[in-house]
Image (cartoon, rainbow, N blue to C red; front, side, top):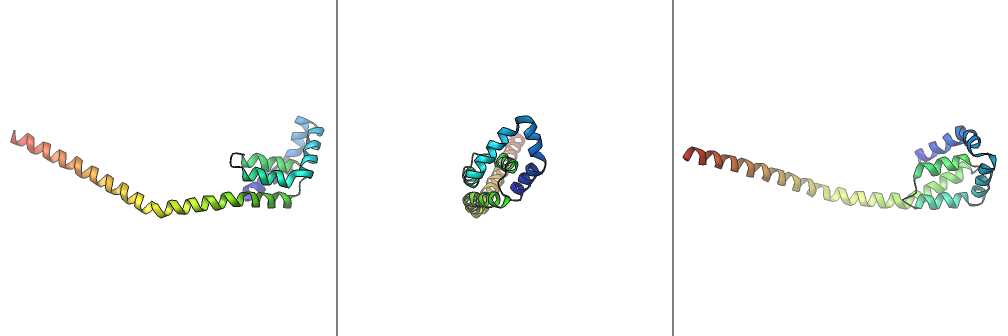
Length: 129
């Protein structure tokens, strides 16, 4: 959320004039009109879709006349489902991490034991030959 707010304010403070020089005033005016009508909903939907890049949405919103409060609320609500899913998935991973690490340790120990046993056996075979 802090990153989204930072991107929004960077675009709001420094970006509009630069973009207006590159694209012209009519492009930003049409974006303003769109975001005035659908801004909150657009940001909410974009935040719900995992394949939509996060920062460009924040920068684009900062270039328009959408209010920060509306942007921030839509961002928070849109990120909530993903945050819940990621937290749940992370908790599932940490629950099984102990057994995963234990299994890796046992596998490593068995590999070392087998390697050492083979080395000792080959040395004994060499001495007896």
